[in-house]
Amino acid sequence: MTSARYSWCLILVALLASSFGCNNQTVAAFDLPPQASIIAPLDEEVFQTASVQFAGSVDDNDPLETLAIEWRSSQHEEPLFTGFADTSGYVEFSASNLVTGAHTIELRVTDSAGQTDVATVDIIVATDPPQVFINAPQSSFQYYTGAAVAFSGLTLDTDGVAGPHVVDWSSDLDGVLFTGSSDATGTTAFDMLLSEGSHLIMLRAIDDFGVAGSATVTINVDNIPLGQLDQDSDGFCPDGIDADGNGRCEDAELTGAGSQDCNDQAATVCPGCQEICDGFDDNNCDGVVDPDDQDLDADGWTPCQGDCDDGAPWNYPNNPEICDGLDNDCSGSPNFDALGETDNDGDNVRSCNDCDDNEPLSFPGNPEVCDGIDNDCDLVVDDGFDQDSDGYTTCEGDCNDLNNAVNPGAFDACNTIDDNCDGFINEPQAGPFEMWETGPNSPGYSLNNTSPQLAFGSGQCSIGNLFVLQPGQGSVAGVFSDPTDQWDIYTFDTGLTSNIAAWLAFLAGGSGLPSSCQAGSISWTSALPVTVFADIDGTTYSGTGTSGTLPFSLNIIQLFNIDYKITVSPAATWVDCNYTYTLNFVIP
Image (cartoon, rainbow, N blue to C red):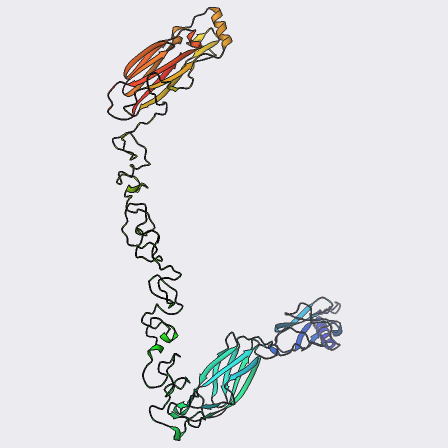
């Protein structure tokens, strides 16, 4: 704020105070914030140089030369300028190192009270304009109204790197010819007819900052029909013969049919030209098509180019080989290439189609048989020969492929069939508590100790008032699984081997043991009648039937050490397998 503005504020405050009768009050001055404005550069201004002139002005009620000034750019970390304005509030400087790109320029002013104001503008600092080159057309060429002019140009960044730009082509006679973008290589190309006259052709390229570069060329376009031009320089025009070699056929050089160019874009095509393999199927313009220059199967290859079969679109040079017996890549060896189109096993199937070219019984379409070979090449061996899905085929020994419980890996259960396909129904199976005995005097199966125990306490079988005799107990499940199995023998020993001191005291006292405490038994139940023999310390007990009990009694001396041998044998004619029974023991 200038001193004049500040004085007027004080006068205004004083007048207001007096109008309200405040003559005895002190009038305070308001400290307004400073003001900043940017004079240069202008907002959205574009610079093609890194040097920019900056100017601004500030205002405040503080002395203007005391206001702190700072200029900043959004593209630079450090301030562009720090300092003070002059006494009029004006500040200017020049920055010569601005980076390329869009900048937000900020002028910040701060007064003695720390109040600030900020002004901003946006500018663009660009580099030199893009480099532009016109490759075609050229001023040294002659152009005609009847022939399209080829245009080609190149645009580069200022550092010489090719890249896309917004481009436009124009003619001072015909106006805008093309607008668009150059490609990633900086190239634009197109063809266009031009009117007769002298043309100033301009190619202009614009970079991302809106900076344009351009190039020009001047060409002449004569008014001559297309049929009177020799565009391929072979001496023939579509309407005549260019006898003087000036690239066109004047009226005196116009000729009739048979001496005119049938393709003025190919120098190898003209009246009298030799038929060659060049992609043109009538080089001599006689109207007769050369079959070697045709692509009859539309595979992109002619016989001249190496198509070995122009009637098959899947046979041409470099085509990947497939397993079809044909020379797909035109290499000359349809059946002996890298795919393996051979037949090693003589089954008339090429190896590339054969799942096993070393096995003549294995090839696609061959009927599957039960032989352990994948006959039909479906990657499943002997498929169709495991109808019950039990994991065993008939050729693997499954004797009933309609019952998944019957196979070589099944357990031979007690029934009337051969479950495991070994040729025997219910073959011998040893029970869990027996071994195979060869006769009634075999050692048999030794059972665990089932001895009675002497323990502290009292009860029915008390010895004195201090000990009680607890009987030993046990059972065993037996089975006869084959008619040849005629004996099951079980042996075990028992004896009181603990509390010897108590037994000696008992014997020395002369006390008797109740007879019930000296009694034991061996009982059984069976699916069919069995005969049970029990040899207990030399005394034999026996019984027969589907159930029964063999009671026995021991004296007190025998309780110390007694041997048991129990023999079980079938007592009925075999009619089924798994002749089962259960023995129970009560040992006094």
